[in-house]
Image (tube, rainbow, N blue to C red; front, side):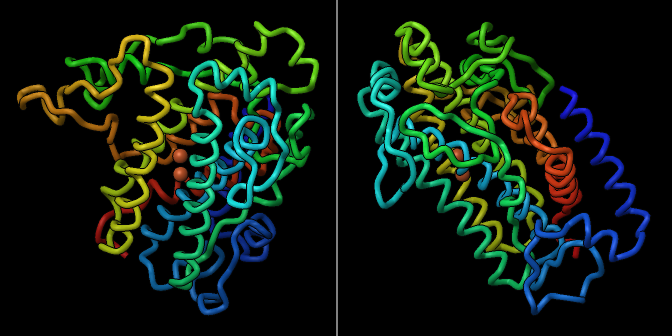
Length: 348
Ligand SMILES: [Fe+2]
Ligand SMILES: [Fe+2]
């Protein structure tokens, strides 16, 4: 909590610093190593990020998405090292047999799904950054924030991480949200938790050390936490892309966003099935959309565009995914989110 508050405070300081337009040297110090400047764009736009041939807003939206995908990749890699399939497509780690078996209790294909979801996230971050670079725009690199110790259980690569899977607090209200025929978060409605115990306290979704493997009941609880973390995360991506797409300017950037977003939906639907198959109600119920005067419609929800990037960042932060990260990390992510939320359609 202290870290989070420090991060927020420091991010506010950084924003006011940037906004006041103090020296470019000062801003460059803050941003050093975070944004990779492309040579073609250098020197054209002052101390803030370079957009190259993209509009400022499109570049900002893509940069926030690149950061989100880098973070997604980081925690999916942790799952794959311990509970997925380690191969040339998703290298790293050597598997943890007991954790993999506990996940398989939920579905025997869990290891394959974890592998495939992890590979997808790799391709998302790689593509978005490569696309930004191809347009002469700055890309995102979070490597300097790879400071969080991860699992030391058998199977983990032991490398430092960007994200923390060992102190999660999960908002599982997506489960009731997608089952409601009368409510939509964009119309101000709220939803009860599916698993109230995961919404309080801190829960590890991976074995932290080999000591976590000793009690089969505890290990199963860890695997169950993971099984609810998967859809909790992917439903976030499933809303984030359509939310941000509404403020994209160029059709090709829209195509990028509209083509990646639904793969997050595919992930969500797969994990939703694993978490929700007790009742077999795994497809979205129709709900009110735009106005309660219009007929109900089966849709992704929420898709409100205002503040969508900051909302996503707050959601991930509240989940505990960044516990242990530095104030500079929170400041940088908040800056990317604010820039993305300032993007407007059709304005350069
Ligand atoms: Fe993704
Ligand atoms: Fe994803």
